[in-house]
Length: 171
Image (cartoon, rainbow, N blue to C red):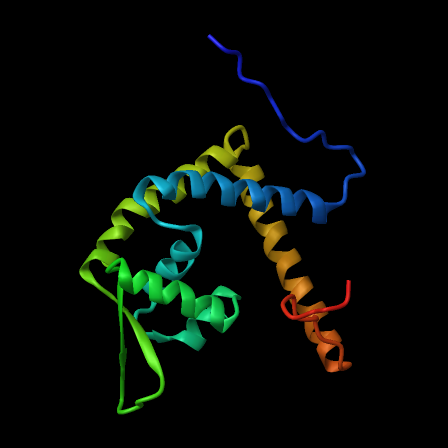
């Protein structure tokens, strides 16, 4: 039997939190992708399904805003999701230009299959942490997220914006 090799990242006491959070997020995403692929669902589709399970019938712009993705990215994902039968896109309220995404029965039923997979990832990630440590971590991350959102808003008030990641020709 082959011994499992550990490829864990050594953590120095002075390690930057930004790096640790990025590595943790990457680990979460990869662990979920491993599970989603068993149901032929991509990580991008998962993101939009989760949003639509909370609020069905959103426009492409609303979905891209909530997913923090560009509209072209959302457009591509929604086309594929429609082809797979997860959603249907249609015009609402007489607006012939803007289409909204609505879950199909198949898209709704995926929730019962996919959400347990995400919970499994959370459980795997939190293994070995006490309930108190988990609560502290959630609180600390929420504070960090709020602080960084405020930092970005302060920068925007000074006229400084995050540069776009696509179309940037300077390296």
